[in-house]
Length: 91
Image (cartoon, rainbow, N blue to C red; front, side, top):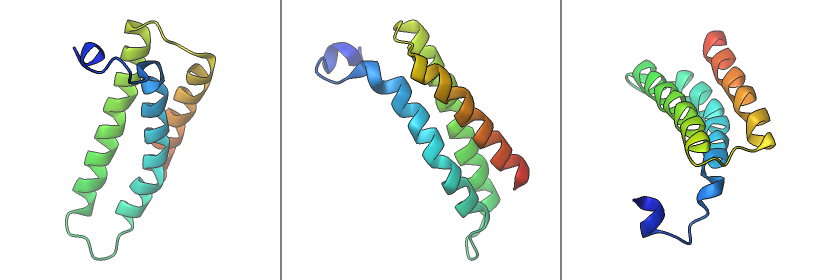
């Protein structure tokens, strides 16, 4: 439905953009974890990790569903996953 409502939007880039957002969420994960005066920071950190995990599923689903897989996306997606999980394990 969205692809029909916004035909000029570059939908073929959306899976890669979701992966970029997941890469950018890694410093946010660490910043939230070490925030000094934030109540319930562990809950916020967990929610950010859950949202990043959802975008991991979503970008793979969209790329396969729309048949817009790319070699760059195939490289960057596992790298982003490993960086996110290793950061969470270290924290």
